[in-house]
Amino acid sequence: MPPAPTFTDAETTLLADAQFFRQKSAITAKIRCLLEETHRALQADLDAVTLLTPADFNSKIHQLVKGEHLEDFPYQYLDYPKHFQGGNTFTFRTLVWWGHYVVCAMLLEGVELRRYKQQLLGRFHQVAGAGLELSLAPSLWEWKRGEGYTFPITHDRKAQIAAIVAERSLIKVLRCFSFKDVNVQNGQLPHIACEAFRAMFPIITP
Image (cartoon, rainbow, N blue to C red; front, side, top):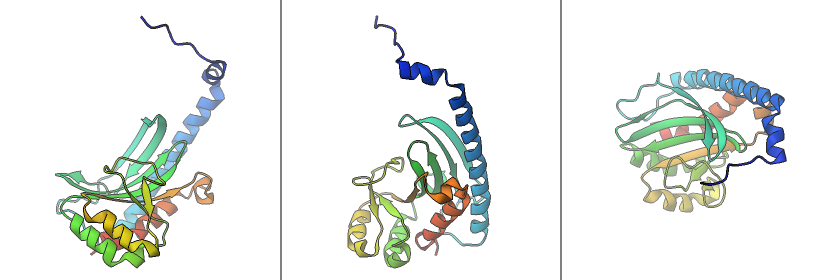
């Protein structure tokens, strides 16, 4: 039988730090509030635009999720618009990943994927230069960024982007924001989420 685990001095101090856990609870509640506000702001954007969506898409569906173990870190996210059905994905996720950053990502796969690819490339210079990145991961559920994980969508990289998306069975376009970003610190999550979503309109509107 393996020996019982013990706690280091640092771990013991953390376990006994009631203020830390109160702060964590308070921050969690603030993030939930901001994600609810983000839902309302995105809803206003959806009401004003026509999107290229799967036939059974329902613009009223959304989801708020909180968890503790995205690669061992807490997380909270809003999915809106949200569509995961029959192999089709059309979902915009606003993810607050504790210890990392805020991610605003459009997740796309399924019946309309060819059209999304065509519009990404056909309207490339409307998309490029807005701080967006293309995920290189084979799955929609990889949230790390940087070399080997994401590829910046800049005006001089159309050929590389075309090569990346050519054979892909999904597209994930994202924008990341540091927690030190003044807009994040000032509670402007709805604003930055809407800004990122609008930057993706050339890909997902007719």
